[in-house]
Length: 257
Image (cartoon, rainbow, N blue to C red):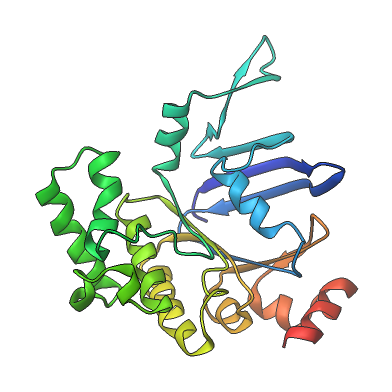
């Protein structure tokens, strides 16, 4: 088995009076594609945002390659947590790429300029180096001929592929996808899923929150079903989709398959 690259233990998160994550335990192994499914409001996206400290957890721990994400441990037993300095958090996030539901591209910059931004501003690459890398990545996602177009000149599917290229430009060890096709018209979904299939085939470690059951069934190494802030069950796509153990999983799948 590949080594564990991401580990979550006892992760809890509350918004006001609502506990949206109720003690999540999870391991993600290097090279694994993990798809997270479940009804809206089950905590899937919040969990993803806890993995790179876009959300502060209320309890538990998240480690990436053995390093505690977002916090440092203090005290004789390490039980006291203090949030890391912003620059340390930025350093950790460099290794965790994220693609959101919305594309969040800079509208006043071309596709290639959007992809160049992180390597230049964060990693200190020269503009020439960053542009060469960005054009190669845009070619990889099928957008070599759109590199000099602005987001407003691109379809939603093309914009999302630029967003994927932008995340890949930071050379992450782990890619997080938060329902990357949910904002797209149905006819544009396939082009984004195609890029994600290629990434999975290349060995990229991926955690994908998705409503695309066909993609999860085809590409995932493991599928995790969440409901009401908890992991109900997890297993291979073959087992989870054809013979789910839990009644709640069966009820959910009956509405989406």
